[in-house]
Image (cartoon, rainbow, N blue to C red; front, side, top):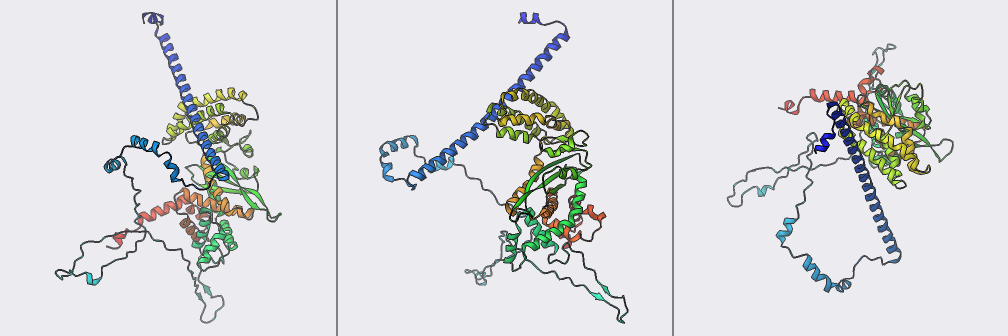
Length: 542
């Protein structure tokens, strides 16, 4: 110890430099340990998944061999078990001693019941009373009348099937009794969402919600209405959807203008089969694009284009100058090339997916990449509940050093992989998108990935499996408009069908200056005001 102390410099500045150097080496060691631990965790996950896959394949192979060559019966011959009885029974008694019922019940924990959820108080209650027969209300001993001592109340939910009714509009017409010209007056009828149509706003809202929110195709709805004794063809309902979509396009355009004022927009696209008018019975690919506003402008707007060219996003994003978070599709290059007004933010989920898909062909490199990315997401989970400034500080403290490690690692890893290996493509994607992938650490309100946009496109993917295709490009534009209304209403926690019913009832005949009050957030605020100013039931009925 004395020899070691003698080697230390005597001046404080040199001692401080040595201490700082040791501290830096310790931090570097901790980072290496954390990276190795993350790699081990990723390898363990892959091993577990591979083991499960091998076990499943072995089970399938055994079942196929048994199905092809073995007996079909799954019964076990009891006589065969007796062949091993002399050996098995003594072992069973030795290994599993008899237990009393009390010991068995003590070892087995009682299963927890799932419980019954409380039915909300605002659900209508219909009381059904059950009384004992009159002859049983007299005591058989003293022959005095029995008195009611309590009530047992139980509740169960009941369902009333949807019903249709006819709303008759009667307009009174007045004229001069003396027959003067120009004195005839007809009472005005409220404007309708479907002019000269059969459907009221509630029916149209139900059809639209069923198709675009619940993914119920129009031909199935046609059958449902037929069970109620009403014949409404799918082509008629398709016409209703087109009319209300044209009615609501100015409102969706207002949502678009609001989204363009945001600091960042999430965007993505997905294919939609569209009937080809030139080739009967064939379909071609259209595209539905999603533009997701940030929390300050919480609207979800969809757009339809007949193809995937850059003209669609170029027209939608015209005059936008903020951050655009998207995948590496070349159609967005117009926004980021020299002179472009937008700033690109890439998606770490896309980068991770490429390494995950290539992990079996280049396990060492891919697992190391997955471990790095896992550490980045650990930081995001840590800062999920923080404010924007605190999250930015956390990213600068923890995420930026990890990104520096990844930058050094990727340059060394790329020469180790053959160009035809999928891992090479993943590393190339990482290098090409590197600046955009790092950009989320420069602002506390940017996301690490574009998952919000991908989640918003799930409704299209689910619907596509049910209604299969759009009838035309106009049908695609109709779907984009109605998806925008439904997704934005859901984002604000509104009852979609009630919102659409009110929209289709009040929007016809309204002025353009009235459009802001039909936005989902304004609609929700009006509902909250009505709830506050409404008279409580107890006060109304003392």
